[in-house]
Length: 274
Image (cartoon, rainbow, N blue to C red; front, side, top):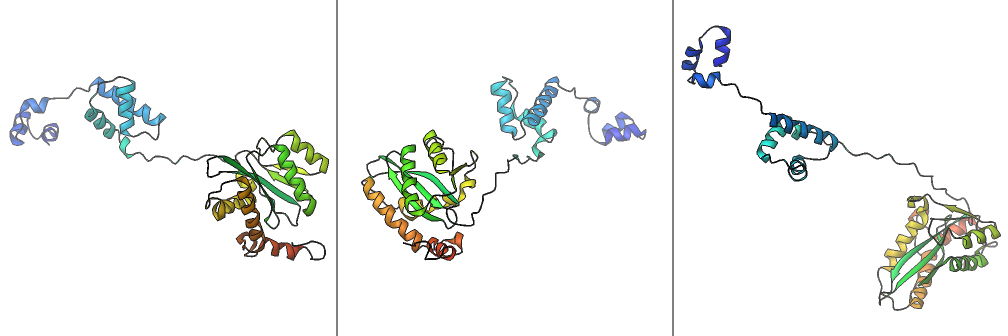
C-alpha cells in the first residue's frame, strides 16, 4: 500500500512510511533473485516433465541423493509450490493393445477341440501335470490325463485314445507350449489331417473355453484334496469328469450339461451318450 501511494504521487516516501508504520529501509529494500532458486526451478520443471508420475518426494531425493545438491527441502518445496507443480494432474497411463483374434464358436461336435496343461503337487511335494481335452461345441470333457511328465509323445497317445471313441476333430486349439509345438505333434496332426490352431502368445482369452474349464477343475476338486499318488488323482479325475459331463449344469451352455447339449445336437441313434 505504501508503494502504491508513493507511485501515485499522493505521498512522499517519508510520509508513506510514517503512515503505514514501516521503516524507510524496509520500503527501499529490493530482494535479489538467488541464482540457486532459478537453478532449483529449472531442475524441478525438467524433472516433472520427464517423470510425470514423480511427486515432490522423488524429485527432492533425486536432486539430493543422485545429483548431490545440498538444498534444504523446505526451500525446494517452496519453489515447487510457487511453480504450482503440486497442482499437477497425473495423466492416466494408457497402453495400446493389439486386438486379439476373436474366439471362433464351433457349430457342431468335433469341429474344434481345445487342449491345455495344468500343474499341481502330490501330498509329498512331487509335481504332477494334467493334460485336459474338451470339445468346444458342448464344453464336454474328453480326457484328463495325469502323470509326472507329459511329453509330446504322451500327448499324442492321449489324443489317439480319445479319437478311438469320439472320432477325430477338424481342429485342435492350443497355446505355444514346448510339447504342443514339437515336431511329434505337428507330424501327428498332418498324418490325421487335423489342423492345429495356435493362439497368439500372451492371449489366453483366445483359448477361453479350456481356460474356464481349467478353473472349474481347479476349484471343484483339485485344490480341495491332497492326493498320495498319480493313480489316486487319475481315479478321482475320471469320476469327476463323468459328473461334470452328465450332472453339472454349465452356465456357458445356458444351464444344461455338456451331454444334454450333445443330445440336442446329435440324434441318439448316431452317437452314444455313454
